[in-house]
Each structure stands twice: as structure tokens, then as C-alpha cells.
Image (cartoon, rainbow, N blue to C red):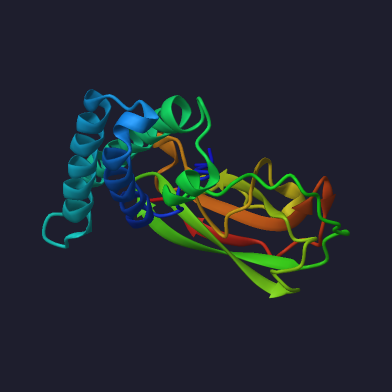
Length: 221
């Protein structure tokens, strides 16, 4: 399953930085925005826990599978609290635009932009994230990433156990998800550890797909 963070920053350092900004801005505006002290206290506690967990998981001497799992849980809890605060205090009633931007949030753009069929070709580079997780990084082979036609990535993949026949072309891949991020993470099942994941990407824009990228593989940790 793909992890989709939408308005949250893509990496944990960015999420932690945004949460710290929220601490400062929300504390100053708590009365005006109707944020209770309990919500700020909980946010403070979750920020501290996420910071400790991230430091532990990134330190070579303290990084263990348990530390990695604890870090993941800490950031999931922090993200859940931030989503709750956004829904409760920033959108109901909605903040004015300067206040919204002060929280690192971007106003929704309702202005449509013209874009044609995608023609760019993209490949995948994998990297380790945690147990049963692989990061995927989208790399352009051809085409301009700034082209409006290149709205997102349709990533296809299959998991193959040792001794099984691997796919020979992208059309044989069976699982898929769409992401607009150039970096994303796939969480595999517990039993997938030690198996090989095969990937291929197409640029996708409103149902229109570009050419296949090459078939690549990565070992699931």
C-alpha cells in the first residue's frame, strides 16, 4: 500500500519542522482560533516523542528494527493529530489566507490548467526505509518534469518469491497505485520479506498514460 501524505511534507524531518511551526503559531493564536490548551499540550507531547524517536532511529548505534517501528508509530500519531487540528481549528470556520499560509499550508487552486497527453518516460530507483518497506524514487529518463502533462506517476509492481518466474515486461505487473510524489513508500506484507519486488512506471494525467519506463527490481527487507 502506498503512503499518501498529501499536504504533509514528504519526509519526517519536514513533518517535524511543520509540527514545530504549528506549535508556535497555534500557541500565539489559540484564543482567536478556539484551540483548547489540551490540544496544544497533546501536540507538544507528540512533537517531543517524534523528535526522540527520529533521533534514535537515525543514530547508527541505536537504530534497530524496534526503533524504526517506534519511529513510524510516533510519526503516524503526530500526523493524525495534525490532521485533526487542521479539520477542527483551521477549516471550521476557515482561517483567512495569511493565517492559513503561516501554518505552511497551501490554498487549494481551483483554476484549471491545460495539459496534453504525457510523453515523458520515468524509471524507478528503490531505497531501504524499514522492515517490509521499500522507498521508490521516480527519475525522468526523457521529458520535462515541469510540463503540465506530467501530473503524476502510475506505479505498477509485483512481488516474486525465490524460485518463482519473474515478470519479463511491465504488462505482467499486477499491483498498482497512483502518486504525485517523486518519492513514495510501499509497505509490503510481513511474509514478503526476502522476496523481490519488480516495478515499472507510467506518467499519468487524467487517465492518459505515457510510455512505460524500464522494468526494475528491489529486494524487500
